[in-house]
Image 1: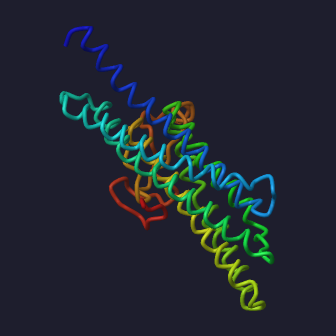
Image 2 (image 1 turned 90 degrees about the vertical axis):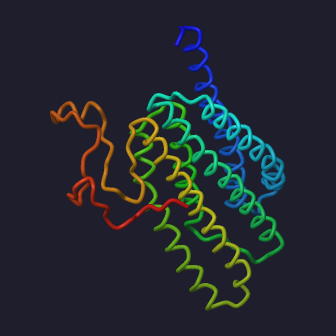
Image 3 (image 1 turned 60 degrees about the vertical axis):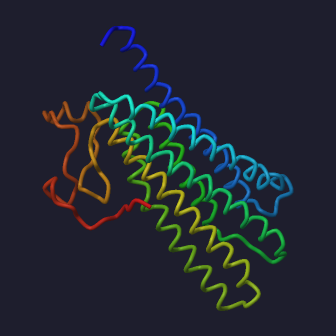
Amino acid sequence: MTPAAGLTEAVLYDTLVNYLISMARVVESAMNRALDAIIAFDNPRTSALPGEVFLLEPRINEMEIMIDEHAIRLLRRGSFTDDEMRLVVAALKITNDLERIGDIAVNLAERVISLREMPDAKPPEELAPMAEAVRSMVSRSLGALIFRNAELAAQVLESDDVVDQYRDRIFENLLLRMTENVASVSPGMQFVLATRHLERIADHATNIAEDIIFWVRGLDVRHGRGFAVRPESEMTTMGLSSEVTENSHGLHSDVTPNCETQRV
């Protein structure tokens, strides 16, 4: 391969990464609008946010198609390094998860519109902190993508259980409220759906983090395979050359424990 050809190849792969980052930023913007809207659904200042989410969805869909087409063009060129192949595979998966987050943002916006028609709707107390936990997961996934940082991606994996705990507590509280007051059933169901949407966003953020670890480190950590990504400095201190260690279950790396995080 000539130097010029090598430069062209590098530009093509950098373009794919830049497309991914651009799509991730748009998706994050749509999601943030949806989260702000559901947290303060009865605030006049958030009244325009659902419409803005709806307007961003077609743009997200177009970006998904553009990235898929670019990845396919790269696949047709053949002759990949391991890093390049992992990037293309990860990119195709990440775009799917990003597009799903965009769809879920639309679903949240629809919940907001429904709740505004219910004068007695009262948000669960833990809805706001749950939304912030989800926001943090997506933000860290985006940061891991931009900086190709597997350690930041690993932090996303560790946060998923927190969101699940919020979902369970909110559901229990809503169920109790709905059994005590029939009038709260309709808004309660909307909030149950909203928490489900939030949980799904967290799941997709987890998927993205797993794909980033695969791309950057060449490690498949899906389905709770028992790996924990450690900082390079810590690995050096411990005198280990490997970039991963077994988790607290003490399982061998080729044994799959009970899955805590599932791809969706």
